[in-house]
Image 1 (cartoon, rainbow, N blue to C red):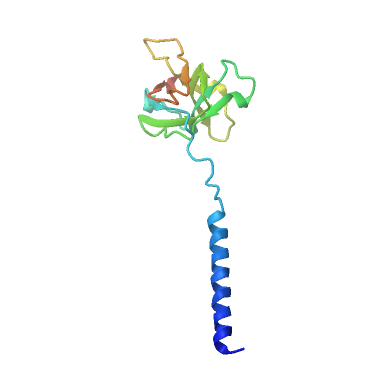
Image 2: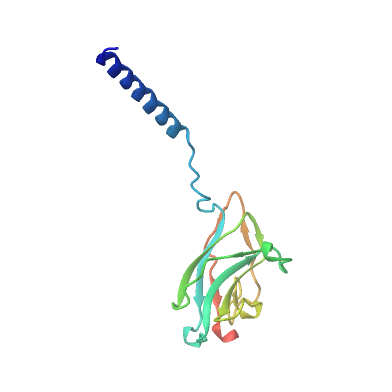
Length: 157
């Protein structure tokens, strides 16, 4: 075989190989993870008296319960850690559509486990005014329950 024919076949092999690899790459699907949740509760935690904060606070989170007395942790949804060194801080809880009768603020003592006795605020409860918790609704029509601001009182503990 002449060198031209060999060269021609090498070029053809390269083109076929490149086309096959390109087709394989283009047909692949990439998993980009879960992505941001479309349904959530957002708002602010407003700390009433930052000077009253105990010195042994490890973490603060906002929790939403799908039942007033949850059967297990599957009925409870947690925010990420909330900054407690500020007078107020934003939070977000990813949760499925539904009704959440209690949305509250919990703090965790350094070196201890989470404890329901460390509840320092409930949505709808304000010192010297409203004393009834307010339920939060997430629906398909309203997937983000926004402005769910919670007053947190360090003095409770």
